[in-house]
Image 1 (cartoon, one colour):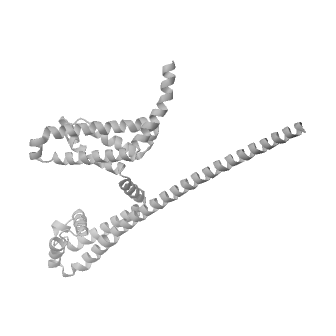
Image 2: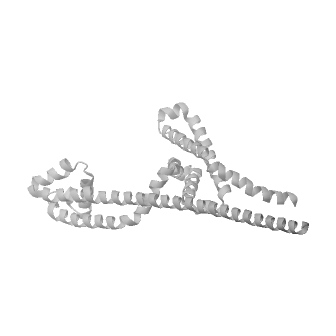
Length: 286
């Protein structure tokens, strides 16, 4: 019974120590270094010559790193318990490590290639990368209207291109699907002159009147709208973090001031009591 009570008393203390350990800067730097080392080993495994010379060593290193990542994850779960599973980044790390432990033989051999997902743990370990990902996720609702606008533009332009160039360039614009795919290639500016515009102009000299406005709108306007939404999201998150930090600092200052005021009031009360006692002793002597 006493041993059980002692274990209950020691558990919170041990959990607090583990929490301080896994959140310390040195520990995070070590985890980051291990992730980078794992990225290098996974890249080297793609080389046949390297695997022939150092294959067993790389496999042992990969297994050791997986065990270390699993131990680090277990420490975090022990330290934070339920809070770990309420953290999206904790769930992300758990899924990545869980996929790495999945069997990779037989029909599941494709899962072996998913080991490289462990490198993505840098997103949860490096604060700057985590902030960028959070900003991108926060920007998704704002991108909905832009995606709808782009889809509408591709549909209208695809129908027009099919009607204008379908007969002369059936491989590029023969169907609506082909036209949309060609327009997507046109938006990326990949071989747009030699593969798309020049063949179209051989049959339709005024084709530039269609292609140039499409390129300007899709490539230089719509894509910049995406960038603008993401930049605004990053700025908004930064301002919210700075505001939260300022409020936390102000709350800490107010708490310290309140504690100091309470201490001063208690000290003044004790001084008054002492004065009353001194006055009472003087009255008894007289």
